[in-house]
Image (cartoon, rainbow, N blue to C red; front, side, top):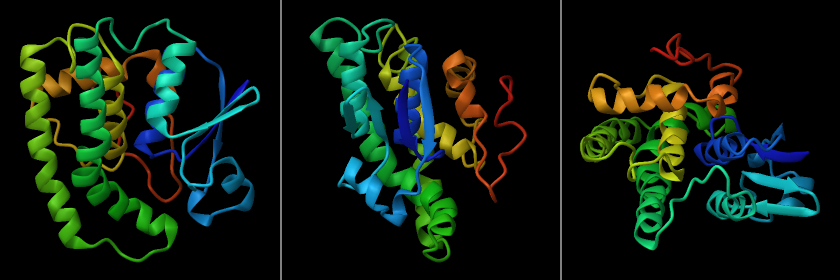
Length: 221
């Protein structure tokens, strides 16, 4: 069985977890306190980051590379569409959420509110939280625009772009930092994607000291 070294609220870990579950690859989850820089973990990934996926004799790091590997090694069900143009759009949006959304929103909300306490690095910086709360509105509006023109974020079929977005939003929803009333299209999209069997373990996550809100695991909000 595969083993995934992860942190429950990490959107990058969640993206890999969703890919594994969607492809029905059995995987043992091993929670890793990566910030403690344990020697055994650093041998698995000298970069000191999660996720790290162990499959057979292969140890893999970096969520984008892991997801691409899974897509090539386990092509069904496909999370990347056929055709260069469609694949480009999926990869563009994955990068949007893992880079831009992460820097402007996830880092300023989730990492300030939760990671600082978990890592023992002090109190949230209020200006960062304020910046994140402002930025998420822009990103939700962009998602709303995409969904007004497409069935899914990147096109007519669900893809890795949807999992990347859902991974970030689900982590933020765990701490009630998503205004689902801002866009009915985005709310409906998220309700659909979190109803998938692949999302079950995500909705069962529980971080000590940070209980999720009642709506977090409610498929109908």
